[in-house]
Length: 323
Image 1 (spheres, rainbow, N blue to C red):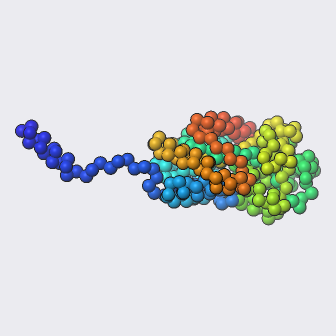
Image 2: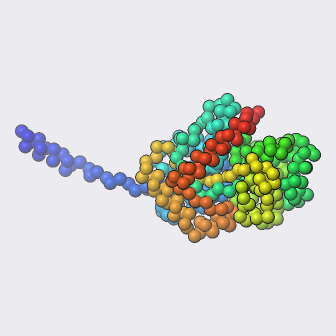
Image 3: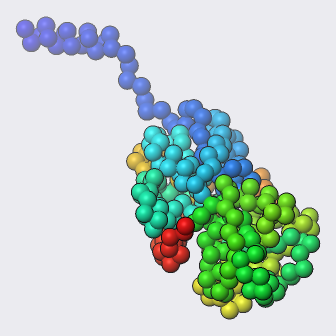
């Protein structure tokens, strides 16, 4: 009897389909979500990242722009996506503060930071205050004097309330006692277009989107939010050196996956990100775009992200509710 059972089991096993070896990620397109319209900092960095990943993985890596709610819509979409590595987020620093902003305003967050796993950082630059080149304003001192002379009349654009373009301007307004008109848009690209089109008088932006316009002579940088001066903007003073020690803000760009994504898949994405950062063409594109490559991965990125997120949450709490 035992012999017949054993023979039957062997026969059944021989008829069963062979067990497939675990597939090596990725075997199909990987979508990178940018939570803003085209033209902003996440888009400027994200597109060359995606193009380089396509060469490394030999699969399509499309960018999907999902703007709205200062980035919260796209962030939440990835946070709730299947944790399989096929939907990733090219996030800005505002990703860490938007859930706290929702709570401050009495709303339930659409996602929380722990729903997203940090993989690699590609850029981390201070924001830059720019005005049109035709403006008579040439220094931060003249800017502050002009705003104080016209309370509530000098306007600035941003990517939305509590976005990475709004928070630094709110910092400056608090530190210098300024009354400015905030005009929120759906992303950094539209915010920049508003400045170029004369709809607003100034903008705090990451260096990438504004660099071509500075080189073309259409925009003038007058201050940065860094602790030290920004490479490529060496003649532009920091707000810290001008007497505003609390005006420090960095707009960083990093890649995240939904929490719960398997460790081997995270490792594959991290390894590919390392190859992206070492790629000569990618480095050339990032430099030409006005960004500074600041690649960090694994524990190094996690430490940076955790420390910056804590500082951003404190900033949001200090800003309080925005009507």
